[in-house]
Image 1 (tube, rainbow, N blue to C red):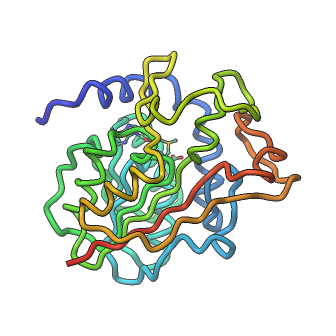
Image 2: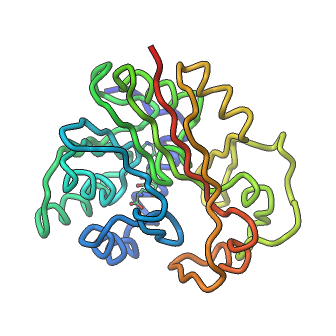
Length: 251
Ligand SMILES: C[S@@+](CC[C@H](N)C(=O)[O-])C[C@H]1O[C@@H](n2cnc3c(N)ncnc32)[C@H](O)[C@@H]1O
C-alpha cells in the first residue's frame, strides 16, 4: 500500500473523526435531488458545470459522500469516486444502497490515485481534492488519469475569500493574509487546506498539459440560503466566494 503524505494522513484523521456525523442529512438531500453546486447550491441550469457525460468515464477526486458522482451516473457517465476518508465513503455506500445508482468507490488519496493512466474523460472535484490536496501532486495525477482531450473541472473557495478569512466566522472584509502565505494553510484542528493563487494555478495547469477553458467567479443573490456560515450571503453577493474552473488536457 502506498504511504500517505503527511497532509493526507492528517486530513484523513480529521475527516474520519470530525466531519462525518453532521454530513449525512445534507448528503442524502443532495444525492436524491437535482445537481446544484457549492456553498450556495447554485443549480446546474445556472452554472453549467457538467459537460456532456453520456458514455463518458468520470473520476471524482475527493468525492466525499458521492452525490456529484451520483448525478453524473444519472446523466449516463461511468463514475468512480475516490476519497481519503473511509467514513465519508461509508456514507456514499449507504446512499448507493438506499437510492442508487451504484458505482465504484476507491479509498485512496487523490495525491496518489490507484487507477491506470488515461482511464477517464472527466476528472471533477467539488471542494474535494482541490481544497485538501497538494496541487503539485493532485493536478499532475488528474492529468495522468485523463485521456487526451479530457476535461478537469473543479469548484473551490475563491482566493479573495481565503485572503479575508481571519479564522473566526464569518469571513470579513479586510485582507488578513498575504498571497505569499498561500497555498498551504494549516488549520487549528490539524488538517491542511490548499489555495493556489490564480496565476500559479494557471501556470501549474499549463505545465501539466492543460489549457484553461473557463474560470467563473461565483457571485450569488444577497438573500441566498446556505447550510454553511463561514461566509455571509451579503459578502458573497458583493465578491466571489467560490470559483468554477474548467481545463482541457491537450495532446
Ligand atoms: C468538503 S468535502 C467535499 C466532497 C463532496 N463534495 C462532499 O461534500 O461530500 C472534502 C472531501 O475531501 C476528502 N479528502 C481530504 N483529503 C483528501 C485526499 N488527500 N484525497 C482524497 N480526498 C480527500 C475528504 O475526505 C472529504 O470527503
